[in-house]
Length: 141
Image (spheres, one colour):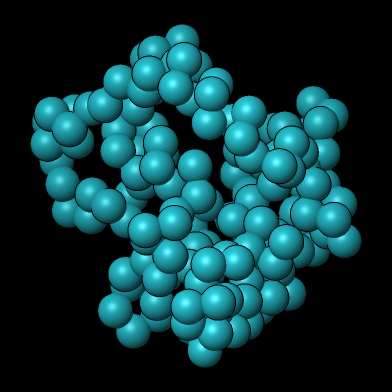
């Protein structure tokens, strides 16, 4: 967001406004500390996160165009969650429903991506915030 704030302050303010609005709307159900944005690490918090506002639009999505306003600098979760990726034991193929609106299961499966685990670990080391959070809170850091 720092690059966005420097290069396009008006857009950065709109994004930050949407992030604050998202937190105001969904924060009461956030399974963690709503003041810091850090997800809880208890078993109950983890279970609650599985169903936490999955249908809520990301605050980075422009409400008029549906496009990501931060695409070039999008968060790691978007880089690895947009494309279909095997999750957990490999049986479930997780993907962003916004990216595959109207696509059949076969089409989604045909787009499956394998995440290089060494690269993912390397990139995670570069991230200054080590606690787990969601996009809306990360945008306001």
